[in-house]
Image 1 (cartoon, rainbow, N blue to C red):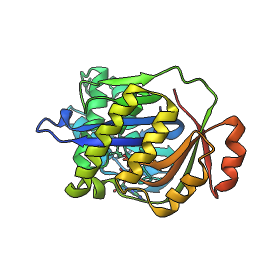
Image 2: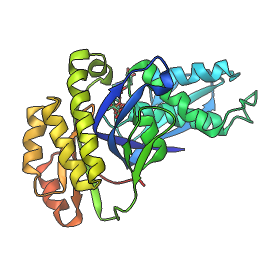
Image 3: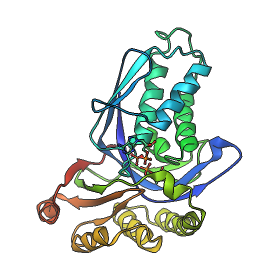
Length: 279
Ligand SMILES: Nc1ncnc2c1ncn2[C@@H]1O[C@H](COP(=O)(O)OP(=O)(O)O)[C@@H](O)[C@H]1O
Ligand SMILES: CC(C)(COP(=O)(O)O)[C@@H](O)C(=O)O
């Protein structure tokens, strides 16, 4: 089971008493690098690229399945292309891959869990929201591709842009970590984010192209003051590409480039990771 990484260009967060309606609107792209999961007999230990760690939304997924009768007799092994906490949706990817894997194996797991396929997406989303590690990644990672999220949470209300062709590369460079929870729990910052995110969404819906997505992502990053000076300066140097901005909510740059500008774009970066859009 593979779940793609997700790059959020811009977003606005919504809180509701109904956790399924808590989430975000916004836009992003999934990429062909992400996270794979493997379950082995065990007692609930979590490994990320061989290291035993705690991932809040993964623990929440386990708790929710236990309430449905799962006995928790697995160790969970994630093999990921990106680190956690880089704004590439790895926390959501881990939660969703586990939820989908437990759903897929439900007949082998002691009780038949009696779930609909969409319930496993809901379980992963609830886990991310409860942990404060994400608002919209899980839905975008379930839909895949260039996804515009028009309503927060469920029922899923998205516009998936499908006519984008295969000529685009997505370049990612990770500069450090940034805990999503810190931003999402800061009301002052969220107020600014939400105003700008909503306006970017309206603009993108009027002209839903990758070029406009990149232009609005950079506008969002600058106006929200989330972008740092180092990433901003590299984004300016990458103006000859389709566009570059900061992947939300991380200390990570992303750039979309056509093949003809790819080598020039890579020459500006130190540790670029080249991906394709995962459709
Ligand atoms: N080494 C680590 N670096 C960053 N997060 C970690 C690490 N180990 C465990 N975690 C957990 O992983 C989750 C990362 O969430 P988040 O910041 O939303 O990441 P992402 O941007 O990949 O979705 C948090 O629950 C955090 O506590
Ligand atoms: C931007 C974010 C709120 C967090 O994304 P990440 O840092 O990758 O967990 C995302 O979930 C979204 O709603 O678009």
